[in-house]
Length: 128
Image (cartoon, rainbow, N blue to C red; front, side, top):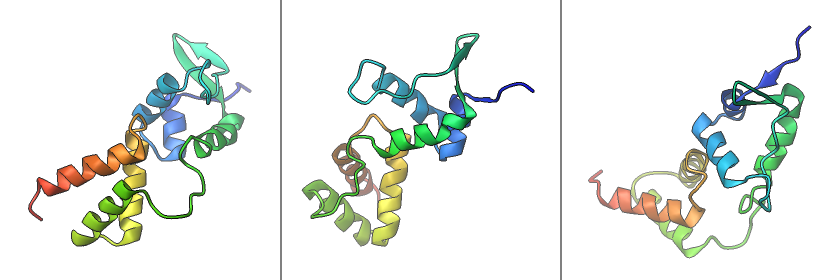
């Protein structure tokens, strides 16, 4: 029986992300970085592949990304501004945090403060 491998799309689907996010991780966290993305097990026609049983390793890598800790304490000033703006627009705190996490997954190259500032700017340009 052939061995099963996951490509970038397979990893993205398994984690509920876009393949763009996985591509960004690979370029942002190369093997010589402080938090390297797990190296692929195979390459076929220039495309990387990871053994299916390494999905848990990749999920642990994602959960240990810098800035993704358990958190606690007071939110940063820009996050507080973001939450205030979101609440004013009718979002619950939970909805606002899920939206922020979704944008974080979609744009892994942006820090949370950058995302918060960007979303505030976008919202202030809208009338809803």
